[in-house]
Amino acid sequence: MRSGCGSCGNSRTWGTRLCLSWGDWTAQIGDPSGRSATRPMLTAEQVRENAATYMAQFFKIVDRDRTETRWQSEWFGDFSLTDVISLTSRFTVAQFLARDDFASRFKANQPIAITELLYPLLQAYDSVAIESDVEFGGTDQMFNLLVGRDLQQMMGQTPQQCFLMPLLPGTDGVQKMSKSLGNYIGIDEPANEIYGKAMSLPDDQIVPYSEYLTDIAEDEIDEMRQALGGSSKRLARELVAQFHDANAAREAEGHFERTVQGRELPEDIAEFALPPSEELADMRLSRLLVDAGLANSAGEARRLIDQGAVQIDGERVNEDSTSGVAAGCVLRAGRRRFVRLV
Image (cartoon, rainbow, N blue to C red):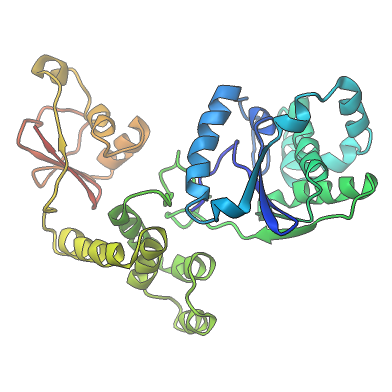
């Protein structure tokens, strides 16, 4: 359920406190881990905006009062060319090209920017700057974390311990969780949305999600494995209760049973004001879905239309047109998103 992207911070322990270091410099380069192409660079403003949303989510889980927040710019702001050359002299290009994502791109004659080779070095220097003793990261970050460990040792520090966490696929059960792919569960989403997305998971993901994201007892997880699956509703309740509360979990389950399983309309459908008729006539349905908050992007909206997952007053829509749209209609996208058009 992590919001994945360039400016995400790395969690490190610092003494008895957690140090959250935000990669406001490396995010502008873009972490190449797991990438098959060069990533576009972000501006400092984009990085700060992204970091604000991640921090709000992070502190829903971690105690803010026991966390120290640091920004890379604290130590890289005064980094000189001499410092950069000194840092790069400690590793070889061959070492970095041995990394899977770089190796595959090099073999395929795809471009690898020099800035991308700098990314693991800059992230590694974070560990030196805050004298990290433990660093957490996904399995796709193993190379970067180990470079940090090596660099600490080279600079006379005790090398950090690296805790690698498995990566969960998204709600499609195939690709890495990504907001742009629409296969994510956001920890700051409404309870009904979290519950519904958890219920849409493929059966073979119930056990991994239950193991990695909940406090369900290990013996119960083992029983799920032996039964070749687990309870989707149990998982959905656990996730909602974790990021909201137990009462919200019960209400979300009732909402799901009524609207998805019972095919009833929700009692509290949000309203969306349609644009003037002349503007509506020239508007694509995909644009309306995005404006109404029923899809995150035009691409996602078009996929929903192509999949027959968009309805107007219960009638399936098969074309990207607003011809059947009118005030008073209920517009539905997928199984859980509704608005009443006014």
